[in-house]
Structures are given as C-alpha cells and as structure tokens.
Amino acid sequence: MSREYAREMVLRIADAVSGGEVVPVETAHISGVSYFTIGEYGVEFLEFLASSGAKVSILTTSNPAAIDLSGLLQVDEKVVEGQSRISKALRSMGVSIFYTCAPYEFILTRPRTYHAWAESNAITYINTFRDSWSDKNPGPLALLGAIAGFVPKTALYTLDGRRPTAAVEVNIGPLGPLEAGVVGALIGERIGSGVPYIKGAVFADEESRREFAAALSTYSAMVFAVVEGATPNWRQYLELADFRDKIQISAEDIASYVRDVETPDVVYIGCPFADLETVLQIVAEVRGRGPTKRPVYISTSPGVYKQIQRLVEEVSGYNVKIFSGACLVVSPYTRRFRVIATDSLKAMFYIPKLHGVRVVPCRREECLELAYA
Amino acid sequence: MLKPIVRGWGRAASRVVKITTPVSLLGDLDPERGTLAGVDVSGKIVVLPYVKGSTVGPYVLWGAARRGKAPLAIVAQKPDLMLISACVLAGVPLFQGDLEEECINIDLESGVYDKC
Image (cartoon, rainbow over the protein chains, first blue to last red):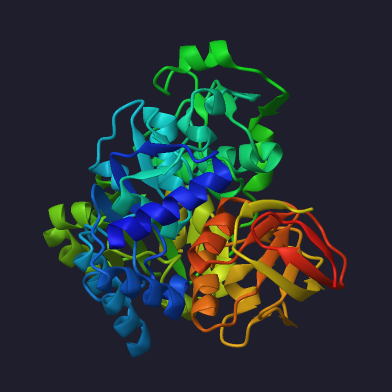
C-alpha cells in the first residue's frame, strides 16, 4: 500500500511538472530531517509514512539532524525527543542515517546517472563536479521518490535543460574556500537562474569545491554549473551553450564582499561538512600553537569523525570542538552565540535568518587568527 | 477558466481570499488555525502570487489538511515544484491564474468557474 501511495504522489507531482514523465533514480538523499526545521508536522508525516510500512527501494541517505552524534551540542529535551522520533521513522523505512550534508564524500555517483537528492549543496556538487544528474527535490519528494524509485523528469534530468545560458569569466588565481564561496554567491546573485558556464576558475582544493557548490545554490535557485576543465563533459556543454547573459568576476568584487571582521565569540568551520584534509590542517595548526582563546567548532561527517576519533579528544584540550551528524545551521545550540566567524558563505546566509546570530566572513587562516586574538 | 495544475474532484462554491505578497508555507501558515499570513483560509479558495522559503513547507500544508484546516483550493500566479509537492501531499487542488475576491462556483477538476 505504501509503495503505491508514494508512486501515486510522485506521479501526481510529475503530472503537474513534467507532463507525467518520470526518471528512475539510483540514489536518494533526503533533507528536512532536523526537528528544528521540520517540527511536529514533519515528524507526523514521517511517522505516517513509516507506520504504513513504507520502505525505500534505493540507497537513501539523510541530512544532518538537530543534535550531533556525541552530544556535544546541548539542546532541550523536546528537540531530543522529536529528533529521536524522526530517526526511528527514517530507520524503519530503511533510510541510512548518515546525518551528513556531504553524502558525495562516500557515494561516488557516476556521470550521467539519475539521483533524487534534496540538499542543495550536495546536488550542486554532484551536478557540477561529476555531471551526475539531480534536480533540487523538496525534502518529502526526495523521500517519496526513494520509496517509489523514480522522480518527475524535470528539466535538469534532460540534456536540453542543462544547456549553459550564461558565460561567466573569473579572473582570480586559485580559489580558496572563502573566495570560492564568494564566487558562487556572486554568480548566484547576479544570474539567479539558468546554467552558468564558468571560465577561468581554479579551485584550490576539495573544500573550495564544496564551498562553491554550497554558495551557488544558497544565493540562487541554481543547482548546476559547468566549470571549464572540471565538469565532466564540459566540452559538450560548451557546444550546446546558448549564452544570454555574460558576467565577469574580479578580485575587486571579492574584496568588496569580504569586509570588516568583528571579533567573534566562536569560529565555525564545516558548512558543508569539513573534509578530512581540512580537519587535519586545523589540528596541525593548533597542535603547533596551543589552546585557542575562543572556541573553534568544526562540523564534519560521521565518516570522517570516525577516522579521527582519537584526535577529537586530543584537540578538545586545545578548545577545538569537533562534532558530526549536525551543524550550526540546523541546531538550536547556535543561539547561545552573539557573533560567529566562518569561511562558509552558506552559514553566513542561514545562521542570521534561522537563529538571529551575526556571522562574519574570514579566510581559513584569518578565522584561526581570530580564534587566537 | 483557471489552468489546473493539481486537479481535484467535484464542484464547490466558495469565497475567494486574496493574499498579495509571496508567502512561506513554513512560518506564514498556521496549520492549527488554518490561517495564512494572518488571513483565515480554511475551506476557502486562496489566491497568492507564489510561495517562497523552506523545503519543509509541504509538511505544514499536509499538517493543516490533516486537521481539516487546509484551503479548499490554491490559485497561484507562479506555481513551482515546492507548492505543487505541497498540494499533492495535502490533497489540495492547485490552479494557475488569478481571481477577484468574490464568491465563485468552481469545477475543481477543470478549473472552469462562474460567479455564485
């Protein structure tokens, strides 16, 4: 019955958005699993689906929750209870409770395969850096799609819908995480919709690619960009391109975006989740310099966390708090801070909106300086 | 005639309630009271430009429908995947178009309507 319900819901949505056409999907990643964001109605819906016996039919992973896996972020009892109801419902439907916003770290999606993902940074990452195909599905649609095994065939599931529409020239050296985020945000704000084709962008490392993808999709409705030399099949996309917009992004644009740095209460790294290399860099830095004056919070995926468990304990003595399964965007814990310094443009966008806490941007090394200031 | 996006069944007569600013289903819709941006929409046809905001929105409309507090139908100038998903889940018919604030008699499947 429940598989039928999911199929019917997805087909009805497809009737409205894609003339009834659907595509089979290989994997799904669902969002809206934090009690802080979905509240009682979200829990009720998940419990309703679970109690009808619904089961996912493909590998399905979940976004971060309101509470982290080791209990570092203290939240009130109501949130803990709501979150555990969500986890129980998801688990009974066969969703892998990875609580990560970077599922691409361990799900190595292939080019030109279909996916039903619902976390914008992750969708943008696999679309842009792997040419794997996913649209931005609303949280419940990704879950229903995971149960049904298919989603509506919207434009991003077709080659024609992925035709580049805007030529973007980036004239700046290798982009570190903060600069990559600013470039993503600027493209998002200036173009808004369509598909950007980006020339001249070199990303310094994996973290920079993540920050770019997260910022682009936070500051616009776009979840796909073609990066010359980086996106698989970029030559084919260039041949298909139909440029209606043309923009340039210069070093001055970035400088004007990154202005005053106010002294924060805390430094936050890891939105989207920090990769192993980033965590190890910070660990090496604080080992050399000793305990920080202000706490450094690092959110990472449960996978990375497991690999560095012994380090977590060691660096907690240096005032560095590494946690996993949640992040400062979706946890109400964040409300205890006044000003947060971060290198994440996505965190900069959401934390003030969701928690009323101020956020200041800094490059990774400046962020650490602020922690010692 | 309104363009049907998510079709319903049967006919209904209802007052039209118009909201002129974009709304977020999360935050602006109170599923306990059936109010949207402070306006009572429960059991009525609600006209709005488009929805904005969180992917969590569909859950809230679903919650309102479960409590019998959902609108009878929604008419949006720009329906998107979020609003469509919300209406399908909640079983609320959705149309594309615009209406004046008056009583209309509508076919929820075809979108054909006339004044009460």
